[in-house]
Length: 239
Image (cartoon, rainbow, N blue to C red; front, side):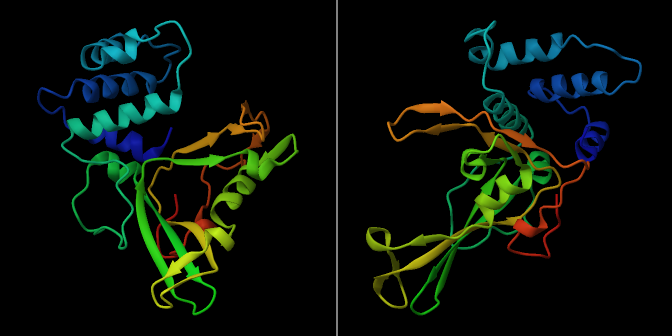
């Protein structure tokens, strides 16, 4: 239901061979968006997946699979078929050139995180940047013992909170040339038109046992969520 995705699907050209997943998904979306259609059988899309990624179909055809993992596989496949090289690249000291040509997947879904480290002694700040196709935010840290938590609280716990680096975790400041106390913060440097949020519902207990966080996450009652408060660059367009 995201308007940018709908527009891209309707205006994209049919293309040539070697883009089976792209063509199969485009046909499936057009069928889903047709009015008066109550159900769709995605046979062509299923055949495309079976031909290009048989492991995704044959691994466990009748069992529940990870939806987020499947979505990332589809996005990467679409990007490869479109000649792009989207993905999570290694963090770097400077943001990549925003003016460089980007694939359709990158234009729609790819954003950029900024990680900042600030020295408590001299104020020197070091920044690194990392591209993302989705944001994974832990639910447990924001929820605590609550049975319900708002999406804004989950995002604030991840992108507004500052982490203190002290003691054994001290940071080496280039300007001071010494290990110093510092603060670390992660923020959104560039937001895509469509942002994918992955709620991490698994956490480890003190006994190193993985448990599922069943806290309810309440969503805002609007179609468009303003993520500007979590952005480190106010001039970037909100999602």
